[in-house]
Image (cartoon, rainbow, N blue to C red; front, top):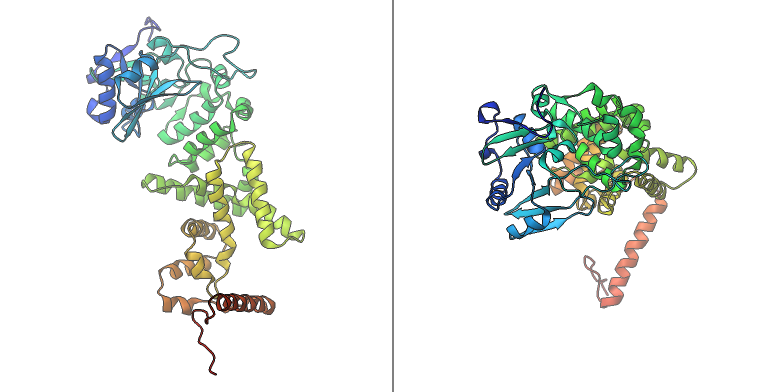
Length: 446
């Protein structure tokens, strides 16, 4: 606003915006009240204020204050100081965890950034106007006071929200160099909120996209998880490609998307994920990453088999190859890797519809996830829908109907003989140990 000091906010009163304290969680109201009663400033800040102004219900509430972490912690029975690069307090209020951060100023000095301009330290406390200026986007730099129900705006965020516009605070090139993840965040939030990225904010992204390579893999995984589980993953992926941000995020994903079946498979997987998120159904990050990387596994699996490898060992080698390549860019947690591998390794077993194998497969702990994965393969045309339909019916069928559905056992004779010998050995071992006939057998007449 012309003539207004950058150090003074434009304050919007209750008649100028729709946000009311009753829209906050009980924990957010309680924590801000206690901080204010102790003589400190306390505001709801960031995404929660933005969402409320856009008519969206926030998922969580962050609080900004002029109290230091050491001053915040004693005010609450369950409060914990966390972080090193960015120290803040987690306050537990019932089942809710409130993140309380201290107003910060811009970090300066030779040790503030790395050789690419990325911030590596951010613990200089400052004034509220400084805190606003160092935030990423104008729409994320708004402060709501639950006591007065006023919105404080130092950077024109309210105007940009009304214009449904995403705009960086400060010079875009500098701000992206400070934190390359801001490029991903701009695309993700714009897709999620249905708003446009300001041309000056968007312009440097294609040129600076390689800076994503400097982001620690664990942090990149967190951002990709938010992006893919936003409920708008399909739209966001399209926007990532439009802004030149897809290279290097998921290795070889571009190759996958250029394949007719690969593109259909990814589209089906993202559409399925978006629908589940919007319907508040659970979505496993492991399942989603399994879908995104599956066609790369198929490529390596086929190559290994073409070179004479046996199917199952070749599949496991392909799985390891793809996950090892992926780990160079996005650090998928080990607990997710195990689930991903189980989902992939169960896929060949869906082809086996004879004997006791189908029933045993339905008892596997990852059967449901693997079946859902199979359904997406069917939807994309990778496997016949008749196979998916068979497994859908088999799950719901009774024992008699299941027996009627089983296919003839077409295993080679040698395989059948090995199975028969194996069963014979097990029965003999049981007899030798007990001196009696194994369960299910009858003693010979003498």
